[in-house]
Image (cartoon, rainbow, N blue to C red; front, side, top):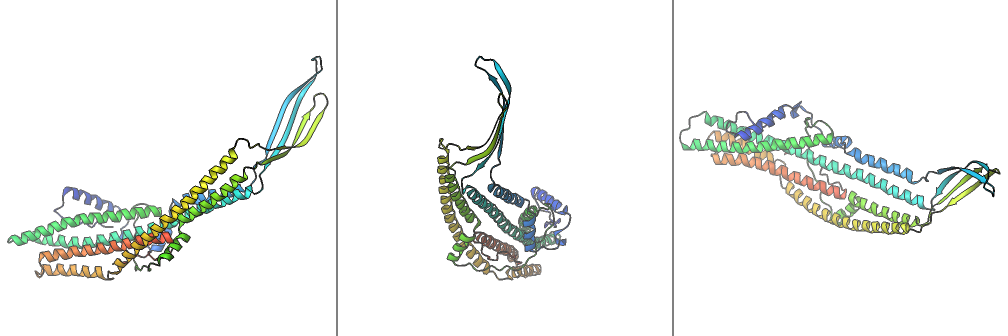
Length: 437
């Protein structure tokens, strides 16, 4: 991508000159100009970002961990192997040792859970898996919206830079024309100063536009997982937003599709199972297993049997666990109510913003920017012929730039509001296209 700053500009401050030189040098160092890069459609760009974004792997591993926890929740604890060995000394009533030798015993114990406990743990693990999947879906949805917003930002910044470059070149050409002549009178001198001042103002706008291009490009490339300076050009197509549905439809869709609200509901359901599990755990598990004991001191003695052990719940830990789980469930209930209230507020706010911005964007005719550009070109030709005064010429050039920026900013705000509302409700409002002014 070439710098929008012409090397013919002579009345630039040292600070501006340093910034512009660094920017132009960095842009020339790119491996290939953006103009030579084939345009990428928005759907292809979003698909590439969703597939290659490295952060997505974090959420995918959360699903893998939840699946492992689900498999583990339906299994009994591993059996325990116990082995005891000792030495036995046998003496008579006078204290004389009669015999001496080793004694040992071995047992295998398996703990059996109280009925229903494994199914409750599996239900909790299932909700944890559902939460992980919702987390991935929420991330992909947010990533898609961010990609669309950045893609339009890149297109918008390029369009603004092109418009500024056109006007800047006109002012630069006029300034060179004036400087090549001998000013005869005050009017030509003052007109030259007006052109020079307008050119300096454009230099700042051009620099900001180029920096906006580079900022959007770098962030998009990072989301794509490619080099930050890789060239990218987004294909422009028609922008057409769907109308805003009724408020009741929006709120109902949000409560059904919103990822954050769904996660809060799943967490509440999970906490309900946790309370039932805590109550179930008040009944202790039973450990059962065979054992073998061997004693060869004196008479040979072999004992084979089945052992049974049950923990005595006298510490009050099980009752405390029920209280803790119940408190967590009440917290989850409150979180659901708060999430619902915030969701309704965000949906209403986003719907109003989208409706206003959509209406504002609709007031612009499709060829508005083209008409302003043609007017600026016409003013340039007639000013050189002396048919247009300097004030009208400068005003038309600035009006052209202001119109382009206003149109693109309005579309960008409408796009952001539409994407926000689409994220909240899950409805397809079609805020996905890029409009070429």
